Image 1 (tube, helix red, strand yellow):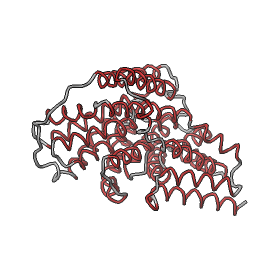
Image 2 (tube, rainbow, N blue to C red):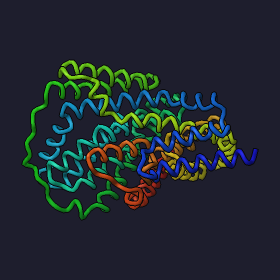
Image 3 (cartoon, rainbow, N blue to C red):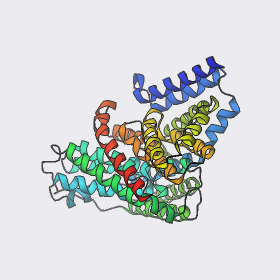
Length: 416
């Protein structure tokens, strides 16, 4: 039994490390799936348990499918180029102003369309804006990555990890705002100030605002309408406490088919541009967490939370911080699933649960593999010919994440 437990932990640790390091520069999904397959091959996990783990992520898969379709159809119809030119024009030759515009746009996108949408929808547009404005793209790309997590608890729909942590049973919007409105504001402001200070030299120069803005095509306008309608639909279904995955997938599919019909283009060519590898990546991560659960890890975590909850303030600080760091070791989606299962067993005070949510949402700003949004962001910038290594991101995240986490957790504790 001890040998099997050690082997399970070893495979999960090795698989997670490979997802982070990407040996041979192979995609992250290969390593997550390989780890899951190894658990089955060596008899460390029953096949039905693995199937059940994959099924737990169904709502997340559907959500991602919808968002990736919206992103690809918008890119194909030139919506990104139009947004890029608009941002460059309104920057009025100020790189710092362009940075602020990108950050505000990221807040809006994350709040109403989720942090994954910021990664896959906004990031390519921002890269195009930097090229049009002849500005250094790195500070603008970092703004997309960090705001995707810093603003991801403004609304329940702002992050799929929120769905995972609360197990599909989201708090009412009124209660959500009471808990997270001010902590979200603290997170957003502190992250902006840190990023603006760290990148101050790159943002000191001027940029070009005299750029050509090609009018949106009918297909581009239809894609924009589809994105807006999707945001409205997600707000409504969130208020009605309905799972977000299926409505998002339907909205993405309908928008794709409508735009292809208007533009008289084939959806097959568009589908080839979607980063489908993210789906097996997420599924593999869910299997790894389920394997850890079978070794008794979650029961141990639940007992630790239950014991610590005698002092809710201390428990919220400790648990939120541990989960923030842990999210970077195994990605925040499976970490949120682990925490969710532990919370169901421990039944801690609301303050502790809220701190866990802040940790699982904001913690991934520490490293490049902390959240699915950041992995999607990395894939998006690689498609544009850019790449940012693990250590380069960590240098920024090691400053931005702890300060924002302290601000958000501190604000939530003051609220009581």
